[in-house]
Length: 298
Image (cartoon, rainbow, N blue to C red; front, side, top):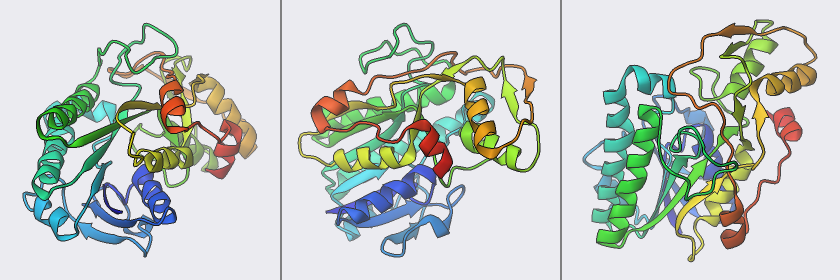
């Protein structure tokens, strides 16, 4: 199968590219390298440096006879979305819309969208959340992710473009950046290894659902199955406080550097944990990497 992965030079996208190659697919990576890394792209994949807002995207997809677009390119920072909501929307809403329109014009059969299981719900009412949980995002990032989902579902209804949406919880693992706030595992690890104090925003008792990037990559392979459709959570189904995460990392690294606490950031949810029951039932996916093992690999 010919698959295009937008954001395929990034943290999660590059692992997805590797998983597709292992499964025997031909992979085109589309990435503007603004945050991605050329070295993350395997030599077996073809890399085209292009922004997803580029009007020539449809011609590129047609040229390579792309059957499936896996859309990972995005602005990933909640705090940046709060500070620059217009720019966030240009990247995450209009960029996604251009991908869908390019896919439609190029005759692509399916789009797989990487979305967010934490931010689209806002403060959860039920634990763990199922895919039918009420949608009340607290940040422009969450609003943009939800809009990207709805546009894709609209394209599916209007134009027959197959839609698979994977709502990730907190993904961690190798190649995760230490800048911004998206990857608390990588940020904490980087500071501890440098002998610096990690910074915890809020009291550290906020709860998150951490899932290993290798497991996420396998979910993207299963999203190619003919019967895959609609929205799926990709999660561990377990929650952990940020304080407890830091303690685990301290034990792994062998340091007792204490954190510095800073004010809670606007737009962040207090507690997030999602059920993966639907994807387990329909596609046979489940998280296979225990947190301590995944942290050691990271």
